[in-house]
Image 1 (cartoon, helix red, strand yellow):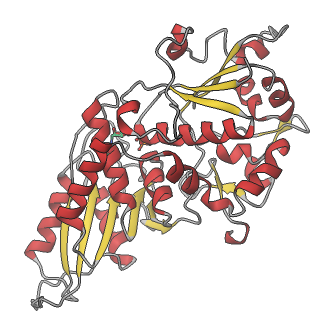
Image 2 (spheres, rainbow, N blue to C red; image 1 turned 120 degrees about the horizontal axis):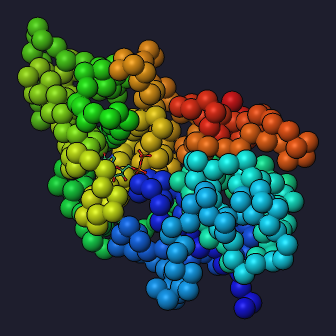
Length: 391
Ligand code: GDP
Protein backbone atom coordinates (compact mmCIF):
# COMPACT_ATOMS: atom_id res chain seq x y z
CA UNK A 1 0.00 0.00 0.00
CA UNK A 2 3.00 2.30 0.48
CA UNK A 3 4.16 2.05 -3.11
CA UNK A 4 2.86 3.17 -6.46
CA UNK A 5 3.51 0.95 -9.46
CA UNK A 6 3.99 1.15 -13.21
CA UNK A 7 3.27 -2.05 -15.13
CA UNK A 8 4.98 -2.31 -18.52
CA UNK A 9 3.14 -4.48 -21.07
CA UNK A 10 5.20 -6.49 -23.63
CA UNK A 11 4.11 -5.18 -27.02
CA UNK A 12 5.54 -5.01 -30.58
CA UNK A 13 9.04 -5.96 -31.82
CA UNK A 14 12.10 -6.29 -29.62
CA UNK A 15 13.62 -2.91 -30.51
CA UNK A 16 10.34 -1.18 -29.67
CA UNK A 17 10.08 -3.14 -26.44
CA UNK A 18 13.58 -2.18 -25.29
CA UNK A 19 12.89 1.49 -26.03
CA UNK A 20 9.57 1.47 -24.18
CA UNK A 21 11.03 -0.35 -21.19
CA UNK A 22 13.71 2.34 -20.92
CA UNK A 23 11.07 5.08 -21.28
CA UNK A 24 8.87 3.39 -18.66
CA UNK A 25 11.80 3.06 -16.26
CA UNK A 26 12.62 6.75 -16.57
CA UNK A 27 8.96 7.68 -16.05
CA UNK A 28 8.86 5.42 -12.98
CA UNK A 29 11.96 7.13 -11.59
CA UNK A 30 10.50 10.59 -12.16
CA UNK A 31 7.19 9.66 -10.53
CA UNK A 32 8.62 7.47 -7.74
CA UNK A 33 6.93 4.31 -8.95
CA UNK A 34 8.09 0.71 -8.86
CA UNK A 35 8.47 -0.63 -12.41
CA UNK A 36 7.09 -4.12 -13.02
CA UNK A 37 7.78 -5.78 -16.36
CA UNK A 38 5.48 -8.22 -18.13
CA UNK A 39 7.69 -11.22 -19.00
CA UNK A 40 5.57 -12.17 -22.03
CA UNK A 41 6.96 -12.47 -25.62
CA UNK A 42 10.09 -14.09 -24.22
CA UNK A 43 11.11 -10.88 -22.42
CA UNK A 44 12.00 -12.82 -19.27
CA UNK A 45 14.43 -15.06 -21.25
CA UNK A 46 16.32 -12.16 -22.79
CA UNK A 47 17.56 -10.03 -19.92
CA UNK A 48 19.20 -10.44 -16.54
CA UNK A 49 17.35 -8.90 -13.64
CA UNK A 50 18.75 -5.35 -13.41
CA UNK A 51 17.88 -4.60 -9.77
CA UNK A 52 19.84 -6.53 -7.13
CA UNK A 53 17.96 -8.73 -4.65
CA UNK A 54 14.57 -8.18 -6.19
CA UNK A 55 12.74 -8.97 -9.40
CA UNK A 56 11.32 -6.54 -11.93
CA UNK A 57 9.04 -9.26 -13.37
CA UNK A 58 5.32 -8.82 -12.87
CA UNK A 59 4.13 -11.70 -10.64
CA UNK A 60 1.99 -14.26 -12.48
CA UNK A 61 -0.78 -13.78 -9.92
CA UNK A 62 -1.25 -10.13 -10.95
CA UNK A 63 -5.02 -9.83 -10.53
CA UNK A 64 -5.88 -7.65 -13.54
CA UNK A 65 -5.97 -10.58 -15.96
CA UNK A 66 -7.01 -8.71 -19.10
CA UNK A 67 -4.18 -6.16 -18.97
CA UNK A 68 -2.48 -7.41 -22.15
CA UNK A 69 -5.71 -6.92 -24.13
CA UNK A 70 -6.16 -3.27 -23.25
CA UNK A 71 -6.26 -1.13 -26.38
CA UNK A 72 -7.29 2.34 -27.55
CA UNK A 73 -10.95 1.34 -27.17
CA UNK A 74 -10.73 0.14 -23.57
CA UNK A 75 -12.92 2.04 -21.09
CA UNK A 76 -10.09 1.64 -18.52
CA UNK A 77 -7.80 3.85 -20.60
CA UNK A 78 -7.04 7.30 -19.25
CA UNK A 79 -7.70 8.84 -22.68
CA UNK A 80 -11.18 7.30 -22.90
CA UNK A 81 -11.99 8.33 -19.35
CA UNK A 82 -11.07 11.92 -20.21
CA UNK A 83 -13.00 11.77 -23.45
CA UNK A 84 -16.11 10.35 -21.77
CA UNK A 85 -15.76 12.71 -18.80
CA UNK A 86 -15.74 9.60 -16.64
CA UNK A 87 -13.12 10.72 -14.14
CA UNK A 88 -15.08 11.14 -10.95
CA UNK A 89 -13.13 9.36 -8.28
CA UNK A 90 -9.62 7.97 -8.03
CA UNK A 91 -9.60 4.44 -9.42
CA UNK A 92 -7.12 1.82 -8.15
CA UNK A 93 -5.62 1.51 -11.61
CA UNK A 94 -5.59 3.19 -15.02
CA UNK A 95 -4.46 2.04 -18.41
CA UNK A 96 -2.14 4.38 -20.35
CA UNK A 97 -2.38 3.82 -24.09
CA UNK A 98 0.77 5.36 -25.61
CA UNK A 99 0.78 3.23 -28.77
CA UNK A 100 1.29 4.88 -32.20
CA UNK A 101 -2.50 4.84 -32.84
CA UNK A 102 -3.26 6.87 -29.70
CA UNK A 103 -5.66 9.80 -29.77
CA UNK A 104 -5.60 13.41 -28.59
CA UNK A 105 -7.00 12.51 -25.16
CA UNK A 106 -4.33 9.83 -24.61
CA UNK A 107 -1.71 12.43 -25.53
CA UNK A 108 -2.78 14.63 -22.63
CA UNK A 109 -0.59 12.24 -20.62
CA UNK A 110 2.24 14.60 -21.57
CA UNK A 111 0.64 17.63 -19.87
CA UNK A 112 1.57 18.66 -16.34
CA UNK A 113 -2.01 18.99 -15.04
CA UNK A 114 -2.72 15.44 -16.13
CA UNK A 115 0.49 14.24 -14.53
CA UNK A 116 -0.68 15.77 -11.25
CA UNK A 117 -3.81 13.67 -11.45
CA UNK A 118 -1.97 10.47 -12.46
CA UNK A 119 0.25 10.83 -9.38
CA UNK A 120 -2.80 9.90 -7.26
CA UNK A 121 -3.36 6.53 -9.00
CA UNK A 122 -1.57 3.60 -7.32
CA UNK A 123 -1.33 1.34 -10.37
CA UNK A 124 -0.64 2.52 -13.92
CA UNK A 125 -0.57 -0.02 -16.73
CA UNK A 126 1.37 1.18 -19.76
CA UNK A 127 1.36 -0.11 -23.31
CA UNK A 128 3.55 1.69 -25.85
CA UNK A 129 5.70 1.09 -28.90
CA UNK A 130 7.45 4.43 -28.76
CA UNK A 131 10.51 6.00 -27.15
CA UNK A 132 8.52 8.76 -25.46
CA UNK A 133 11.41 10.21 -23.41
CA UNK A 134 11.81 13.41 -25.52
CA UNK A 135 8.29 14.54 -24.55
CA UNK A 136 9.01 13.89 -20.85
CA UNK A 137 11.69 16.58 -21.20
CA UNK A 138 8.91 19.03 -22.14
CA UNK A 139 6.95 18.56 -18.89
CA UNK A 140 8.06 21.38 -16.53
CA UNK A 141 7.63 19.31 -13.34
CA UNK A 142 10.31 16.84 -14.45
CA UNK A 143 12.82 19.20 -16.00
CA UNK A 144 14.97 19.85 -12.94
CA UNK A 145 15.33 16.16 -12.09
CA UNK A 146 16.06 15.29 -15.72
CA UNK A 147 18.80 17.92 -15.89
CA UNK A 148 20.36 16.47 -12.74
CA UNK A 149 20.13 12.90 -14.04
CA UNK A 150 21.31 13.70 -17.56
CA UNK A 151 23.54 16.77 -17.79
CA UNK A 152 24.34 15.53 -21.29
CA UNK A 153 20.97 15.31 -23.00
CA UNK A 154 22.10 13.19 -25.93
CA UNK A 155 23.04 10.15 -23.85
CA UNK A 156 19.79 9.38 -22.02
CA UNK A 157 19.10 6.06 -23.71
CA UNK A 158 22.80 5.20 -23.66
CA UNK A 159 22.84 5.33 -19.85
CA UNK A 160 19.37 3.85 -19.29
CA UNK A 161 20.06 1.07 -21.80
CA UNK A 162 23.42 0.10 -20.38
CA UNK A 163 22.01 0.15 -16.87
CA UNK A 164 18.91 -1.93 -17.60
CA UNK A 165 19.62 -4.33 -20.44
CA UNK A 166 22.12 -7.07 -19.73
CA UNK A 167 21.77 -10.11 -22.00
CA UNK A 168 20.75 -13.31 -20.21
CA UNK A 169 23.43 -16.03 -19.96
CA UNK A 170 22.06 -17.84 -23.02
CA UNK A 171 22.10 -14.69 -25.17
CA UNK A 172 25.49 -13.65 -23.78
CA UNK A 173 26.83 -17.03 -24.92
CA UNK A 174 25.50 -16.36 -28.43
CA UNK A 175 27.08 -12.89 -28.45
CA UNK A 176 30.52 -13.92 -27.20
CA UNK A 177 30.81 -17.05 -29.35
CA UNK A 178 29.98 -15.06 -32.46
CA UNK A 179 32.20 -12.13 -31.53
CA UNK A 180 35.21 -14.30 -30.69
CA UNK A 181 34.80 -16.47 -33.80
CA UNK A 182 34.24 -13.80 -36.45
CA UNK A 183 34.85 -10.26 -35.23
CA UNK A 184 37.43 -10.08 -32.45
CA UNK A 185 40.61 -10.39 -34.51
CA UNK A 186 39.84 -7.75 -37.15
CA UNK A 187 41.56 -4.36 -36.94
CA UNK A 188 38.19 -2.68 -37.33
CA UNK A 189 34.53 -3.69 -37.11
CA UNK A 190 31.87 -2.10 -39.30
CA UNK A 191 28.22 -2.88 -38.47
CA UNK A 192 25.57 -2.53 -41.20
CA UNK A 193 21.92 -2.91 -40.21
CA UNK A 194 19.64 -3.38 -43.19
CA UNK A 195 15.95 -3.07 -42.28
CA UNK A 196 13.55 -2.89 -45.19
CA UNK A 197 9.95 -1.81 -44.58
CA UNK A 198 8.27 -3.34 -47.64
CA UNK A 199 5.51 -5.93 -47.95
CA UNK A 200 7.79 -8.04 -50.16
CA UNK A 201 10.84 -9.67 -48.60
CA UNK A 202 13.52 -8.63 -51.13
CA UNK A 203 16.49 -8.47 -51.58
CA UNK A 204 16.05 -5.24 -53.53
CA UNK A 205 18.59 -3.78 -55.94
CA UNK A 206 17.84 -0.21 -54.78
CA UNK A 207 18.67 -1.15 -51.18
CA UNK A 208 21.94 -2.74 -52.21
CA UNK A 209 22.76 0.34 -54.32
CA UNK A 210 21.97 2.61 -51.38
CA UNK A 211 24.13 0.72 -48.87
CA UNK A 212 26.98 0.57 -51.35
CA UNK A 213 26.67 4.27 -52.23
CA UNK A 214 26.71 5.21 -48.55
CA UNK A 215 29.61 2.99 -47.48
CA UNK A 216 31.80 4.00 -50.45
CA UNK A 217 30.98 7.72 -50.26
CA UNK A 218 31.72 7.88 -46.55
CA UNK A 219 34.86 5.72 -46.90
CA UNK A 220 33.49 3.00 -44.68
CA UNK A 221 34.24 0.31 -47.27
CA UNK A 222 37.12 0.49 -49.75
CA UNK A 223 36.56 0.69 -53.51
CA UNK A 224 37.21 -2.47 -55.47
CA UNK A 225 39.53 -2.59 -58.45
CA UNK A 226 38.73 -4.70 -61.47
CA UNK A 227 41.84 -3.75 -63.46
CA UNK A 228 44.98 -4.10 -61.38
CA UNK A 229 44.77 -6.65 -58.65
CA UNK A 230 46.51 -5.50 -55.47
CA UNK A 231 47.82 -8.35 -53.43
CA UNK A 232 47.03 -8.07 -49.74
CA UNK A 233 49.89 -8.96 -47.45
CA UNK A 234 49.87 -10.44 -43.99
CA UNK A 235 50.32 -6.92 -42.64
CA UNK A 236 47.30 -5.50 -44.48
CA UNK A 237 44.56 -3.96 -42.36
CA UNK A 238 41.55 -6.15 -41.87
CA UNK A 239 37.96 -5.09 -41.53
CA UNK A 240 35.15 -7.36 -40.37
CA UNK A 241 31.73 -6.27 -41.58
CA UNK A 242 28.77 -7.46 -39.55
CA UNK A 243 25.56 -7.34 -41.55
CA UNK A 244 22.20 -7.80 -39.86
CA UNK A 245 19.08 -8.29 -41.93
CA UNK A 246 16.06 -10.55 -42.13
CA UNK A 247 17.30 -11.41 -45.63
CA UNK A 248 20.65 -12.95 -46.61
CA UNK A 249 20.70 -11.49 -50.15
CA UNK A 250 22.59 -8.28 -49.31
CA UNK A 251 25.27 -10.14 -47.40
CA UNK A 252 25.78 -12.58 -50.29
CA UNK A 253 26.11 -9.77 -52.84
CA UNK A 254 28.65 -7.88 -50.74
CA UNK A 255 30.69 -10.98 -49.94
CA UNK A 256 30.82 -11.96 -53.62
CA UNK A 257 31.78 -8.48 -54.71
CA UNK A 258 34.78 -8.39 -52.37
CA UNK A 259 35.71 -11.99 -53.20
CA UNK A 260 35.64 -11.49 -56.94
CA UNK A 261 37.50 -8.15 -56.88
CA UNK A 262 40.49 -6.93 -54.90
CA UNK A 263 40.21 -3.77 -52.80
CA UNK A 264 42.04 -0.71 -54.10
CA UNK A 265 43.80 -0.11 -50.79
CA UNK A 266 44.70 -3.75 -50.10
CA UNK A 267 42.41 -3.92 -47.05
CA UNK A 268 41.14 -7.41 -46.21
CA UNK A 269 37.36 -7.33 -45.88
CA UNK A 270 35.27 -10.14 -44.44
CA UNK A 271 31.48 -10.23 -44.20
CA UNK A 272 29.42 -11.94 -41.53
CA UNK A 273 25.71 -12.27 -40.93
CA UNK A 274 24.61 -14.26 -37.88
CA UNK A 275 21.05 -15.07 -38.99
CA UNK A 276 18.51 -14.48 -41.74
CA UNK A 277 15.16 -15.13 -40.14
CA UNK A 278 13.19 -13.99 -43.25
CA UNK A 279 10.15 -12.83 -41.23
CA UNK A 280 9.59 -11.03 -37.98
CA UNK A 281 8.25 -13.51 -35.37
CA UNK A 282 8.36 -11.50 -32.18
CA UNK A 283 6.55 -14.15 -30.11
CA UNK A 284 9.21 -16.84 -30.64
CA UNK A 285 11.90 -17.30 -28.03
CA UNK A 286 14.91 -18.21 -30.21
CA UNK A 287 13.96 -15.59 -32.80
CA UNK A 288 14.01 -12.89 -30.11
CA UNK A 289 17.27 -14.20 -28.70
CA UNK A 290 18.91 -13.94 -32.11
CA UNK A 291 17.52 -10.44 -32.58
CA UNK A 292 18.87 -9.34 -29.18
CA UNK A 293 22.27 -10.97 -29.82
CA UNK A 294 22.48 -9.16 -33.17
CA UNK A 295 21.50 -5.80 -31.71
CA UNK A 296 24.22 -6.25 -29.10
CA UNK A 297 26.83 -7.42 -31.65
CA UNK A 298 26.05 -4.36 -33.79
CA UNK A 299 26.63 -2.19 -30.73
CA UNK A 300 30.18 -3.57 -30.46
CA UNK A 301 31.07 -2.08 -33.86
CA UNK A 302 33.62 0.71 -34.26
CA UNK A 303 31.53 2.33 -37.00
CA UNK A 304 27.88 1.68 -37.77
CA UNK A 305 25.38 2.11 -40.59
CA UNK A 306 21.72 1.84 -39.57
CA UNK A 307 18.35 1.99 -41.29
CA UNK A 308 15.85 4.85 -40.99
CA UNK A 309 12.73 4.30 -38.88
CA UNK A 310 14.13 1.20 -37.19
CA UNK A 311 14.01 0.86 -33.42
CA UNK A 312 16.28 -2.24 -33.78
CA UNK A 313 18.95 0.14 -35.13
CA UNK A 314 18.22 2.83 -32.50
CA UNK A 315 18.90 0.37 -29.69
CA UNK A 316 22.22 -0.74 -31.24
CA UNK A 317 23.25 2.89 -31.74
CA UNK A 318 22.24 3.89 -28.22
CA UNK A 319 24.07 1.03 -26.54
CA UNK A 320 27.19 1.62 -28.65
CA UNK A 321 27.46 5.32 -27.91
CA UNK A 322 28.23 5.92 -31.59
CA UNK A 323 26.70 8.33 -34.07
CA UNK A 324 25.96 6.00 -36.98
CA UNK A 325 25.45 6.73 -40.63
CA UNK A 326 21.72 6.58 -41.17
CA UNK A 327 20.34 5.17 -44.42
CA UNK A 328 17.40 7.37 -45.45
CA UNK A 329 14.14 5.58 -46.12
CA UNK A 330 13.76 4.76 -49.83
CA UNK A 331 10.62 6.08 -51.54
CA UNK A 332 9.07 4.34 -54.57
CA UNK A 333 11.74 1.66 -54.44
CA UNK A 334 14.45 4.14 -55.40
CA UNK A 335 17.76 4.66 -53.59
CA UNK A 336 17.65 8.13 -52.02
CA UNK A 337 20.29 10.73 -52.86
CA UNK A 338 22.19 11.38 -50.62
CA UNK A 339 21.99 7.76 -49.47
CA UNK A 340 22.81 8.45 -45.82
CA UNK A 341 23.98 10.99 -43.29
CA UNK A 342 25.61 10.85 -39.88
CA UNK A 343 23.06 11.36 -37.09
CA UNK A 344 23.27 14.39 -34.76
CA UNK A 345 22.93 12.36 -31.61
CA UNK A 346 22.86 8.72 -30.56
CA UNK A 347 19.37 9.14 -29.09
CA UNK A 348 16.42 7.17 -30.53
CA UNK A 349 13.62 9.00 -32.32
CA UNK A 350 10.13 9.34 -30.76
CA UNK A 351 8.03 8.44 -33.81
CA UNK A 352 4.58 9.59 -32.68
CA UNK A 353 4.95 12.64 -30.41
CA UNK A 354 2.07 14.94 -29.46
CA UNK A 355 1.93 18.32 -31.22
CA UNK A 356 0.20 20.23 -28.50
CA UNK A 357 1.18 23.07 -26.23
CA UNK A 358 -0.31 22.23 -22.83
CA UNK A 359 -0.07 25.86 -21.66
CA UNK A 360 -1.91 27.49 -24.56
CA UNK A 361 -4.06 24.38 -25.19
CA UNK A 362 -3.36 24.69 -28.91
CA UNK A 363 -1.48 22.74 -31.54
CA UNK A 364 2.27 23.51 -31.53
CA UNK A 365 5.51 22.22 -32.99
CA UNK A 366 6.94 20.44 -29.96
CA UNK A 367 10.29 20.20 -31.75
CA UNK A 368 10.71 23.97 -31.39
CA UNK A 369 9.93 24.55 -27.71
CA UNK A 370 13.36 23.91 -26.13
CA UNK A 371 16.83 23.74 -27.72
CA UNK A 372 17.55 20.12 -26.72
CA UNK A 373 14.39 18.57 -28.25
CA UNK A 374 14.33 18.75 -32.05
CA UNK A 375 13.19 16.73 -35.03
CA UNK A 376 14.76 13.45 -36.14
CA UNK A 377 17.02 12.99 -39.15
CA UNK A 378 14.94 10.10 -40.49
CA UNK A 379 11.42 11.31 -39.69
CA UNK A 380 10.72 15.02 -39.77
CA UNK A 381 7.69 14.82 -37.46
CA UNK A 382 9.55 12.69 -34.88
CA UNK A 383 11.28 14.13 -31.82
CA UNK A 384 14.75 13.41 -30.50
CA UNK A 385 17.08 14.69 -27.82
CA UNK A 386 20.30 16.37 -28.83
CA UNK A 387 22.94 18.32 -27.03
CA UNK A 388 22.22 22.02 -27.39
CA UNK A 389 25.30 22.84 -29.41
CA UNK A 390 24.66 20.11 -31.97
CA UNK A 391 21.99 21.79 -34.09
P1 GDP B 1 11.85 -2.18 -36.06
O1 GDP B 1 10.60 -2.80 -36.61
O2 GDP B 1 12.96 -2.14 -37.06
O3 GDP B 1 11.58 -0.85 -35.43
O4 GDP B 1 12.46 -3.10 -34.89
P2 GDP B 1 11.79 -4.13 -33.88
O5 GDP B 1 12.95 -4.82 -33.21
O6 GDP B 1 10.83 -3.47 -32.97
O7 GDP B 1 10.99 -5.17 -34.76
C1 GDP B 1 11.58 -5.86 -35.81
C2 GDP B 1 11.77 -7.34 -35.46
O8 GDP B 1 12.00 -8.06 -36.69
C3 GDP B 1 12.98 -7.62 -34.60
O9 GDP B 1 12.74 -7.51 -33.23
C4 GDP B 1 13.31 -9.03 -35.01
O10 GDP B 1 12.38 -9.90 -34.43
C5 GDP B 1 13.07 -8.97 -36.50
N1 GDP B 1 14.25 -8.42 -37.21
C6 GDP B 1 14.32 -7.30 -37.97
N2 GDP B 1 15.57 -7.13 -38.46
C7 GDP B 1 16.30 -8.17 -37.97
C8 GDP B 1 17.68 -8.55 -38.12
O11 GDP B 1 18.49 -7.90 -38.78
N3 GDP B 1 18.08 -9.67 -37.45
C9 GDP B 1 17.22 -10.41 -36.70
N4 GDP B 1 17.68 -11.50 -36.08
N5 GDP B 1 15.91 -10.09 -36.56
C10 GDP B 1 15.46 -8.98 -37.19
